[in-house]
Image (cartoon, rainbow, N blue to C red; front, side, top):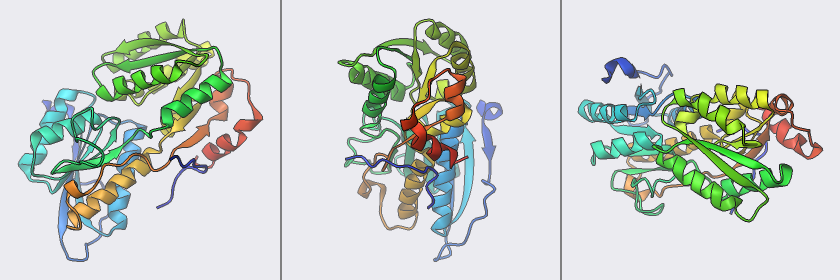
Length: 331
């Protein structure tokens, strides 16, 4: 596997609204025992982070030499659609479900106790009721969380060091449990620092523009959590941040491609690859889901977008050069 980022820090209905395709378009190779498999891939919507996770998942499967056909369905941002997708996969008798987001994973588990499920892009799998603990996966479910245990603390430290005495703006959908968990953790991490926080909530991606414009009246920095509703409208947030001179800090490096300034987070391609490795173990019969612990991201990385820094009126610091070079090397 080739990691996409250069510097790493190791740390101790519906039919009309669904996008579906019978095959991913990737060439598959025949497995050693001649078996072929069908994987149902479900995600809440299509945006760079989730798409990168799906790419990584498929690459892990391909590199293992399995013969796999994919059925991909996006819920197009509507959590109600995730149930229909999961139920369709169960009816079709897929061999495994790849659930790429918290709503997708919850619906998959509600739909089946028999078909193996591997999830990723899930911030709090325990709080979401997917598993009892990281070392206690379910009978038919396991996966990879997208939140490194130290990512939020390190991001808050970065903001406090370089944007001291700032008001940090948070925008999120309260209907996404993963977002609520992150926002609560951010507020706890910010206590005792020079930072204060202010929040705006949204229900749909259509709300993001007005919420961000309102947030910009109070915030010096915007810190984006991995909220699917908000990230789907990332271009809007970038535009307002650039116009108002607000530093835009993200939770995933993929957001830098759209114009975020910095991210101290997880490479979603790598998350997907980790998840794909678990799927290989299950499909080949090497392990059952109940034998595979849930994992956190193996590593986190800091990347910085020079162009975004300039667009947002951020004074450049020489100590950011390595993180900027790391980002440039991925383009």
